Length: 116
Image (cartoon, rainbow, N blue to C red; front, side):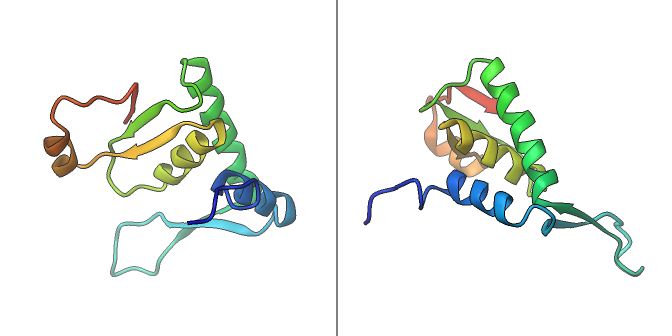
């Protein structure tokens, strides 16, 4: 497996994409739950997505999350997951996706921080 470098680390790849394509769509999220109706979408540009990632990263740092800390993410499949995941990668923390089955296997293991 090749080593992780500035060119291959997801946080750096994301930053380069934001710099190169700030106005392109980064996310497209369906906002209406009525599946029989025409879909309505909320589109978020890379610049907008990055602004959220920066805010979340700052909040984690303010709350004491540091490089190398494992942060448990316990949530359903929601758009905010990718924002939190990218924020943690940006500060060098380790996102740890938690689902009920994994929690049962881990038993007494606990991350330094839980993001719900």
